[in-house]
Image 1 (cartoon, helix red, strand yellow):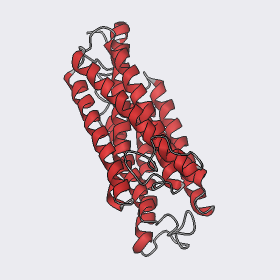
Image 2 (cartoon, rainbow, N blue to C red):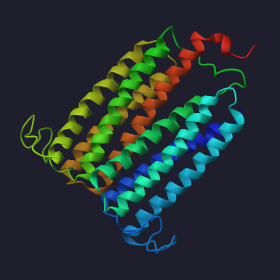
Image 3 (cartoon, rainbow, N blue to C red):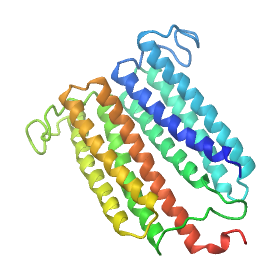
Image 4 (cartoon, one colour):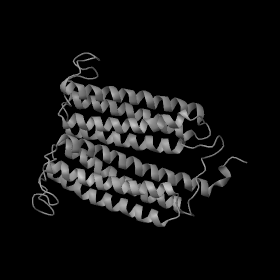
Amino acid sequence: MTVLHPRAYTVTVIWTLGLLFLGSIVHATESSLACPDWPTCFGTMVPEMTGGVFWEHLHRLVAGGLVLMFALGTWLAKRETSERPWIFRASLAGVGLLLVQSVFGGLTVIYQLPDLVSTTHLSLAFIFLSLATVLAVATNGTTGPGGPPKIEGFGHGNGRKLTIYAGVAAGSVFIQSVLGALVRHTDGGMSCPDVPLCLGQVVPPLVNVQITSHFLHRLMAIVATVAVLWLYAWAVRAEVPTRVKRWAMAAVGLVLVQVALGVISVLTFLAIPPVSIHTLVAAALLSLLVALATLGSRASVYIQEPELLPAR
């Protein structure tokens, strides 16, 4: 396998992170309807890039570039991964996901930002980021036709444990992110204007979707933090590669930054920089945890099925 293939997936992950960051800026600057039509902007693909149009149309252009980049990775997967056909099938699923994502992006404009459609749009972006991360890790370091890449440094059973612990943490972060999307699109960011309490109470009156989603978002932040700390505590004691320990430590750092940004977002009345970076850090944390889970899965395949490796 050539090096271009895994690079295409890696660039896709980075590109998706940038797109999520841009999308957060679009919402934070209230530019979501700066282009009142879709897929054109004021009837053209080259509108005047000023004000909110700059952010909204730039977001669309970057999204188009993402489709092209992932299409390249899918084409290369068809040519270069005949020994692992699941990679091509997963890539095709990713293409389909991008198309659905694009349709939901258009619907958010056509129907004037309905809450559930906008929330689904962001949730699909996180799902695609996770899929791209799996593909990037799965195709990185392949030794050649005949079997999966060799993963060394794992003690017996630790690959499977890493997949479980990182997978649980990733699932928690994903649920928290979906709740965060609901908070964003229902304008519930200031429903709990105090920290760490909510309306002066540990459990506020859950009388509407804004307060409920905001409270659940905070609650899931605690769950996700505990899951990441558990993963790190296990990794530092377990027989795993050094990079796993480092990535687990990085995950802890991202969690702490994420919590701080959440607090700052409330205290600054949803200022654009902390709110936008808050989304970016959540996406980066999710991608990192998915990468760890995928790495553990690769290690499990190598340890349990050594006969799949190419003969020396």
